Image (cartoon, rainbow, N blue to C red):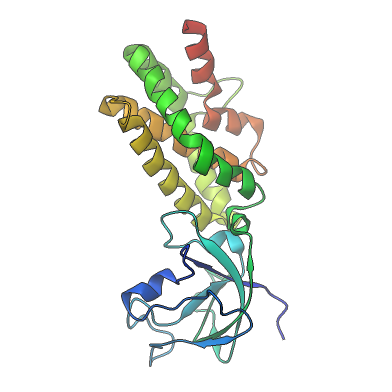
Length: 249
């Protein structure tokens, strides 16, 4: 018997997202029980519908695939009966099955990596205020901020890599660390919330885009700070831009 832990993320109400397109399946109140797939694929393991099987992962950082908002709930489950790993070369952590046993609900921050609690708090409580400040910084000096932001994105310095290189490194590191889904979800959440916060100030589109870019980069920094050097983190956190803003105040 496998000792691997299998993870399954749901919406905040306990529903499996893919099941909402067919027959909704909820894990709420199901701990200890076996759940049969309501509409299993007849040809194993083909995507005959949007919800043809239960998709489990053995890497918690990949549990958020196709989740585009937070909060979520995270569960450990056991596959029951026949299973398959459809693409063992590219996605060895994915297991599909038509039956699961729900074992327990765990901290959803587990799906966001070792720094999950901090990242979760930033997205929920800190990001909106920061986005409004970033938009205000741009508004105070549009030409100067545009020049400095472009310099940070394209140029290396002794103290940091370029923003563009940092972004490329994040994509690679997140994939190798099995945090690709966590990165996709948190970046989407950060971008949406930063955009709404910056727009609420009446900022012009370029100021809003700047705030979104800062939010997404800082989200990457929090997700991957345990795997990135300070040389890369300085670019993601854009300390050059913050220093320049303070100097001009």
